Length: 269
Length: 269
DNA sequence: CTAATATAACTGATATACAAGATATATGAA
DNA sequence: TTCATATATCTTGTATATCAGTTATATTAG
Image (cartoon, rainbow over all chains, first blue to last red; front, side, top):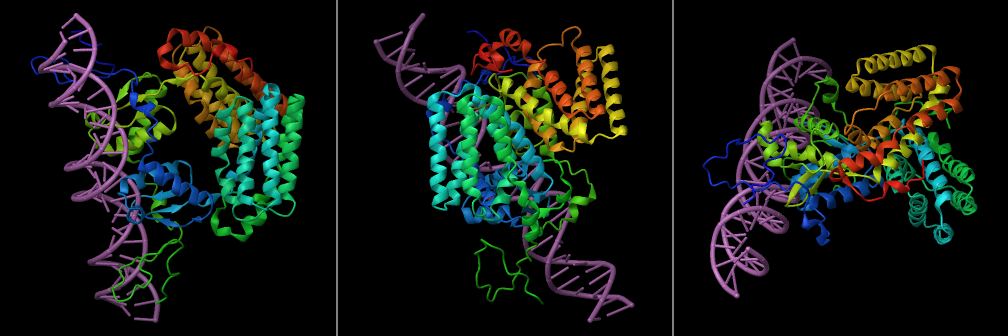
């Protein structure tokens, strides 16, 4: 039979396959993987543990500095250390935990320097998504945006901060989606992680939630008109409404932060 | 002696520590970790393997579709599967490999949809870094920029594409650093991964390298004048000079790509 | 009592072993 | 030959064992 496209690059083993019965499996050059389409919800233990820890850290249920022991969590969760370790490695890459070899692993403190930069990145990225959304949005999509804003308004009236923030994320995700830039939203999600932790330290002040709804509405209005520049400006203005309270929050919980810059000298807005 | 701030949150084990000789180690609440400061170059095996594979994939030494076997690489490298596996997990998060459980792992194909989005994200982020650099740059920093550009010019004359691209990265990193937004450069690096792979498929066309040097110079000129808007515009213009050849390259190596969008209808530039 | 030292227990990093599933080839029937 | 089935072998996921380095505590010298 055909001998298959003999061995890929960088495969230098057994150049002469000579006598042995050739148990070698044919190289499947591309992911033929039928397995991926069985929607088996193939959620692995690592994923479960990752999501669990991720949620706990971002929600500040586990505050910065909390020691994490692979062994202990493994016992608590009734799994081996391997999935826990893999989850922790992922969190390390996101700067949500810091691990010191042979010593200990801890919930990471929030690097203050990351906060203004995160805001700047968000403004740059979401300025672009809203601009693009203003160009692309269909009437039905605009209605969807109105619906999300209305839901957020309800959450604000109920004082349901959790639901409010979920609707907030939905709004921003939808703008990116309408602008056909879902990848940018994924970037934003990654960037705003530390800010989200930050935000969980305190409740929104009175009127803040209503203000946010209003600002969202102004963004949608611009999108509805197809005014790209205005949409971008309104979104940027909306996102600038956060850093006012940075220094206050940092003062109340200094031990949660890495004081790698002085928050006062961030003239850059 | 003082009983230490008895057990942190979510620590529910042995509420009564009663009789046993209490081998329990005091909880060190914060990373006291003296270990981190010994600059022991604590490069772990996982890191080594990660960097190795990362470089091989981005440089297209390992082309999309190449099968990866944890076991085989472990044997080749003379380490156990564990570090290899951890490296692969990192690469998975970067969309550089795709792993199908119980089946196989492969060098990921390049999602075409990621390319225009990456360019858009880069423009948004680096428009901001150059804008900020124009505000912050000192005279000495401007000279450093000139030096990098000169080095890049030399590389172009020598036709050393590898050195050219290294200098290119250095330039963009330096702009971000001068603008006091190093985090944005890290984001850009992450975003441009797939584009870099793409670029390795072909050599720069004649005159392209000289053109890049010229565009860099125009960015520096704007920074030198402290003209934020011009710096931003020049950087954006510079970054727009890539997507012209997308479709051509995709046609020559269709098997390297995930054709999740049609490259023709990207009017958004 | 204080400070330096020794030791024991705990940590993450790595190696190895086992389990569950997927794929390729061999085998057999039409 | 062609198609279906069975089995052997390979894959990644998970569990366990070992290694090497760190830290807390006990110990000891002053």
